[in-house]
Image 1 (cartoon, helix red, strand yellow):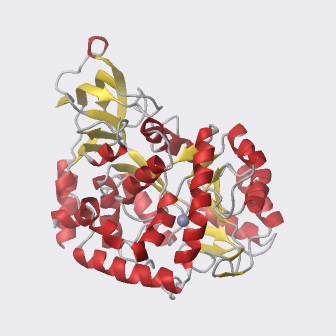
Image 2: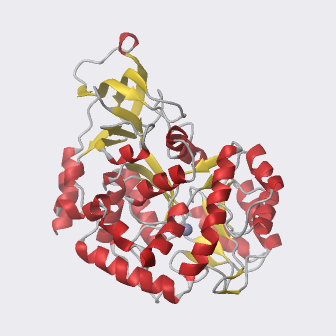
Image 3: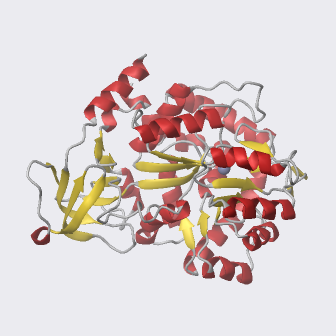
Amino acid sequence: MLRLIFAILVMASAARADLTITNVSLLDGTGGLAIPGMTIVVKGDRITAVGPAAEVRVPRGAKRIDGAGKYLMPGLMDMHIHLIGAGQWRGLENPPGVAIDREAAISYLHSFLYSGVTSVYDAGNVPELILDLRAKERAGSIVSPRIFATGHALSYPGSWMSSTFHGVGVPDWPETTKLLDEQIAIEPDLQKLVMERFGLGPNPLGPSLPEDLMAQIVAYLKERSVRTTIHVATESLARSAFAAGIDTYAHPISTARMSEAYLKMLVDKKLPVATTLSVFDEIIRLSDSPDYLDDPLFSDVLSKEEIAARKAQGAARYVSMGWMSWFKALSPYLKENVKRLHVAGGVLVLATDRSEGPMIHRELELLVEIGIPPADIIRIGTLNGAIYLGREADMGTVAPGKMADLLLLNADPSVDVRNARNIYTVIKGGRVIDRHRLDVAVNR
Ligand SMILES: [Zn+2]
């Protein structure tokens, strides 16, 4: 009930008027350093003008935000999440009729807005949950970042994600097409595929989506204009997905240092690759130093009980699965591959493969740790996310015609990405989000 009241309060506070931000330092999402003294005009849900004060007419009656001393950038985009609200942290296998907790899901969505994230891509979930929330978000009936989703990820029977809450195993060709048609009918923003053989670390070799079937699926979806992303951890499988015409990668490869030849393929074709350093980082830290969960951003959005449960159950789960040492072993390859992709001019896309807003700030820090300049990271977290979705005409930069998804900060994130935590206000679709009224722990 309390959560319902929060939701109504936020809605009421989000009435939309034309909006002007004056005299602000602008990081427009394309990379580079802040440009001071800029004026931005928003009408409805779009940006209509961006420029120096002398060149931009401020409309009468517009709500005005004085941007002096502040920094404006596009809202952050987390392009790999699995929204909590069904199945997660309750064991990996789907119990029959998995319970859906919409209130929890909405609270986690609010954790993204609270953290400055205005768009998320859910890379596999219970379709009834995520598609319902996507519809409600698009209808404006819930307060939420923009939701892009695959519904179920498509894997192969017995393989990773084939029987978890977030995926389904596909039958062999041609029966596959029936499932693909059902999938197309739900309009995935980006259809996720999974090719995962394991046979590494603690994980036994298992079945995987056969390469010819994967290629048939990608071709079938491409013919019907459905964009695709794929989970692969090894270069050989990643190359076969490349040859099949995959549009994006849901992770970098992590089982080895990628070859120069493969790196060049990715860079030449500008294939977007989601960074997902946080998932490795969190799994490792849950056993070694779970105190990251006491960071103010986490304790703002998660209750004490949720944090305690995460520390206890999360660590136990990953230790029992043998993932802790496995992820420790792979993490250096993952980081090196991400760094090399950036240096070579690849299209990296900010993504956590986690389920709550604060983790995006850890992903930003990890990118700095591997040596990527903060100004480049801002582009990775904004414009490149839009490119990942194929939505760059509409989103990802502060420019006329784009959706007004904006993050106004008290300090310059292109100097220190930790300044992206120092949030003055979050604007989604031209609406100022009242962070004090979001359904997150600090406001309850
Ligand atoms: Zn994932």
